[in-house]
Length: 72
Image 1 (tube, rainbow, N blue to C red):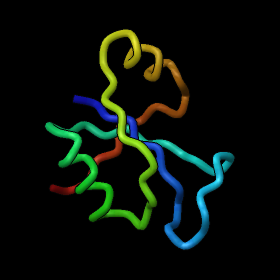
Image 2: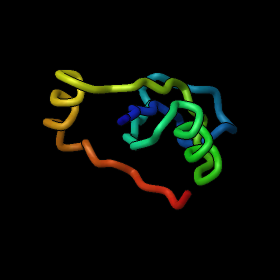
Image 3: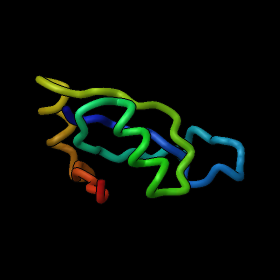
């Protein structure tokens, strides 16, 4: 399953909507996806959303779509 994770780059500042970024990750579960991001980055995770079907097709058309891979 592909998950879209929205995040802030740091946990030290208050979140600002204008600074929200996203990454895409392939994982078996949402829990595993969260764990991979928390273990490998200093990001403040805002939301994790599974994407598939037409939503995934739409996201893949974006020039910013790239699957992020972390060592498990």
